[in-house]
Image (cartoon, rainbow, N blue to C red; front, side):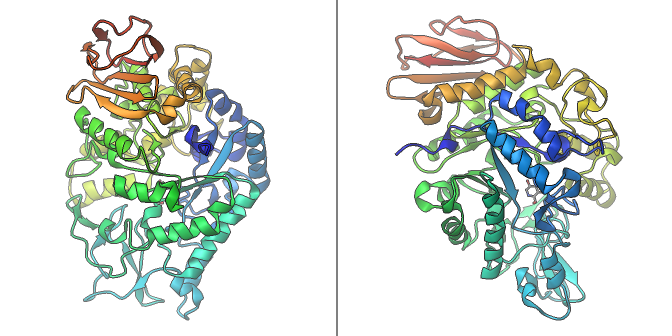
Length: 559
Ligand code: NOJ
């Protein structure tokens, strides 16, 4: 049987609000994406994942949907969307949409009905519970701070919201809710879209006991994960979704699944189980977490990154499929986080790209990653827009009495707005994103870091990513080779093999800003070698020790 097409695809993630503003209202839009399709084509990506563009009050930048079948006006019209889809398809680019169905907006008509004093069928579309001893039904803390429960006078009960209180959780136990979701999916699939990225899809089946959580997070709240992640019916629900909807189309599906092990991921993504194609795991995004979870300024240990990424490569080799990512709209920019966004910005960005793109799985490139865009350091909390950042700041400064400069320093390092500043197209005003003031400030470094400067420069990060993407198309071994970590205990170098029947791919990455020596283990035999890509100019071969330059990366094909 031939392999599914998405095993050789590279996905480019577009955050519409910050991508390209065509009508100069300061917000990116669909016509802006249409304008930039040739750019994505040139990079070589063959799938676009669009963050939510549906009707929404934007409490959480579109992850609070009030109408699943309508395009939010500031992004354009349904005709614009259809044009985008048609033009993308003409270029051989597929489009996947964000499916956000763990929760809706509190402005969705289902929720408004659900809250009515007089009971109707929508009451059971959401999760309502009585309080306990005059307090919330349990001690779960929401992702954005505070309790996951909000009381409604009209109902006389609390409703569950794992995220903001404006994002009430849907009740997936209710078959009618599931059927509504499947209808929404068919609506978009019948327009011709090519799949879905499913927001926090592993949280849809709650443990119905709604027991107190024991895992204290951020020293301040008990996580909801024990009660809500990878719950008892999640696989049943996804299998049903697959049977009723997904299996009828030729799609790519990726579930966002926080708090998920490799064993869980196999269940979601093994072809035989007929659920999803792959999931976004979070373990490698947690290598720089401490007791304050993400809110710190810690550098990860290379040994932890090796351990986690190797585990995912090895465990999902036979069954299931990996998605490969460094960045998305929720993560700090990888070059700032795991690389060096100063002196070695270009070298370290290329090295990180190499490490990820030579692995097994489907790579995702988040807008601007291909330019090595960096984190932003706004001086004032006023410049930040993200609900998570604003709540966190309030919690640290107002409730815990921490120094505002400390709060800003962790926001600089980890806040989600690092990823959400406007795409840097050129060095004109507002980075060529818009002629009006953007909804969020541009990163002032756009003067140096922008697409225009990189597209025609063959040594740019853009063209390096382009080459990495092309290599996946040209060499099957990148899709199918068996992963093997080498130099496991080396604290500076991350190196691994991808073994095929008659050839081996060798990837070598120096994770430091120093020169370091790479010595090929003696048991690796070969007759010839070819350097497929590297981020410095040289081809000294691998017969002798290699003196790797700061953040140097090389990929050899050994035969
Ligand atoms: C994950 C999304 O990626 C994030 O941006 C959002 O805030 C939460 N899910 C809630 O929908």
